[in-house]
Length: 432
Image (cartoon, rainbow, N blue to C red; front, side):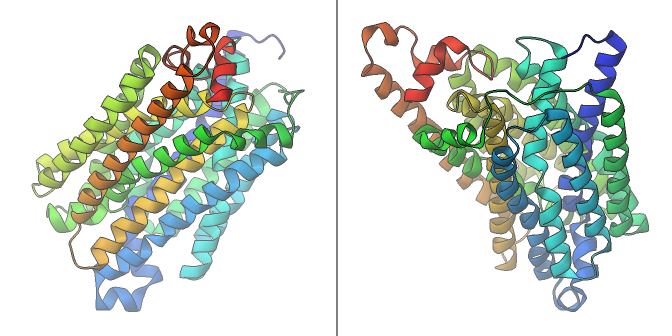
């Protein structure tokens, strides 16, 4: 990486973070516009039952999530030898095209396909852009690099998603997606102009990246994230009808509820990063307990127009408190495959997105009401807590079988390091 002035460094980081901002828009704006999209794309079903149409429209969210799941590991493996800046620019181009296609697709099924395509670069972008950001900041700053890019996503939930949601309600959801596509196009130009050349990892290869999947702990931690985080998406996917049908507020209040969720996510992300660096195991397990409680609290508070905002904030904060800890855990158990580790983390979160949206839609379609997904979330959070506990228990048992020389650097010590882990602990991680 070439020497950069302070202005060039911060400008490049801002460009990469803007990509995270755009991803936050394209992923989360569907939650606020889901009733509008369902009414437009499923007019006959909507006329018969708005609840059934909205539940069926939830597949738009699920299609995006599935695109992330497919694209994240696939692109990470196929582009292991591609220069990182080139990869980031190409991914932004795919985001732009996929989002334009989402805006102009003529019907429900074409929109589903377009959302799937638009999601393919999601996980690989966070991995590649995070690595580029880390190289810009300097040695030993990989966690900060990922935080810089993810910071754009949390900012999108505070500012961008409510504004684009309001635009979509006023001018139509297709206009909202065209605005998001314009944001991606702007980001592409910004990155091309400001981000310095970033070569590929000289030791990188598809085989090296795919090797991470040989480790049972990678699969177990990925499933923990996919199941555990499903509760947040079960709630967030249907936040618009909860606001209007349960709390009795107008459509104009939906963006403000999304602001409350975004503020909670921002606070939770910052505090969760600090806590997980201090004690990863404690942060992950206690975080799940708080997360489960927050979803039960939301189910109670959602019925009141004043307390709904507090409930939305609490759920957002509790969910993103777990985010840094889960990413740290997954990267820690997949040493030697940085891009794949980051990509699998994003894929797991979007399996959670798909699972939560689908199960939430199922209980709504069954006639149990718009608050029912909160109780689905409680169950998914409890399952995630159990899986996280099992992962740590298996790791502890493995550590007890190691020679005395290795036990001194046991798993808890290894994983209480920075999110990327220390080189001294990689051997233990690979055995786990």
